Length: 497
Image (cartoon, rainbow, N blue to C red; front, side, top):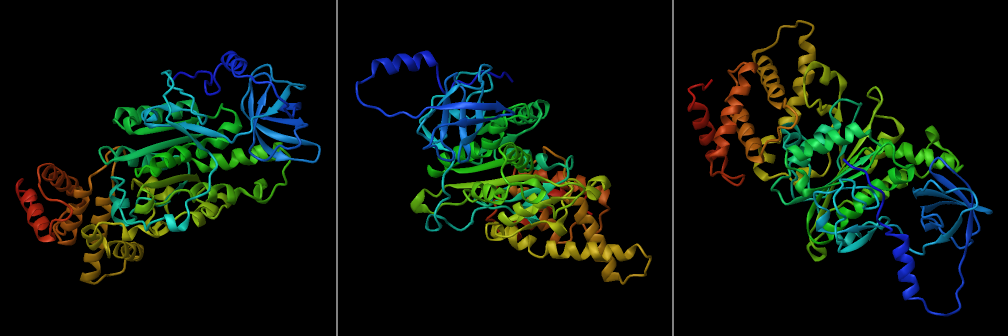
């Protein structure tokens, strides 16, 4: 990945030439401020009495900033682009426009920074317009119910914690448990699904950024994805606006009736960046030194994700924000904020990860509050009682540790629970189709695996996967047709249990 200087603001010389050509004589009133201090990604400025929050500032040396704090004597600004010559005494002007990002289909497959500047070394895409980074969320009357599924390709999510298009589903867990892997798998699974993906990487090391981009490229996912990158070495101001830039891009396609998926990786880093900027600008700290409006910052971002009704184009924006916990503390400040904002959460547990259950999703603490209505009827019918049965199995299994003698019915339920746990295991970067999800659900519910040992399951699932590749069945086919087909696939290898 090659980093280049921002080209969004164009050449200063070209702008000067254009200004001279179009110059007209007349009375003008211009405010002019002066930089008092600069450092750590912020700047203090005196003058500019009419400046308002989020106004764009143009510095005489070519730097750019955004008003972030207003005081009686001076204003505080976050820097979005900083030259080496920016220093105290530099003249500052108001740009008189809001912060926006160029948009258009040519941005698909590109890697850009939050200002729309290419980071992949390729020429700048030709935009068809610009979208403001700050915008109100769609009105209630413009929204539709979440009624279409968005498949992640992960068995445990698509069956027990389904996600719908337009939903906001939080991915929460400690570092290193596979939060980003779930998001990447979901993006990879959108191939040929007519879903545009926006992956926002906030404050990550360059090695992590390159790893994510290479994974998406190797699986052909970059063709329908835009990556907005504000790595750890970028200005704090760029890291702060990165999720809003990604959201503005998604809104452009959503307004055209397209389905979009946006990943915020991750909002813990974004919150820490906002806290850093706020403390530097001497805003009053609140709980854990975060500013008092941190909840509002994230809620106004995530509230823009929705499913629009037909009168407003019928597009959707599904959001998968990622948040980090420390030692599994889900009740920490930022995680609880985001849990209360989103429509459900996928919680990753360290004990499950260590025991070899991956993805290490803890069903007891994970929930999808609205996507049950978006699940396909056949999958919903087959998975209906499965989550409850699995939770009961986990409780029953805990009693077996004391060595009690169990009834035959209890032993059968425990055995089926253990088989289900083995089925739900899945390697990363192996997304599965919705047809496969329905096939294994029907096989399990009809007791096909009851006499099997856990180690034999992968072989049977492999036969089902082979059968799926050549079948004409669809999700709308009857359960009887699916039962017959699954039975034939398993008998074809003479390995019927």
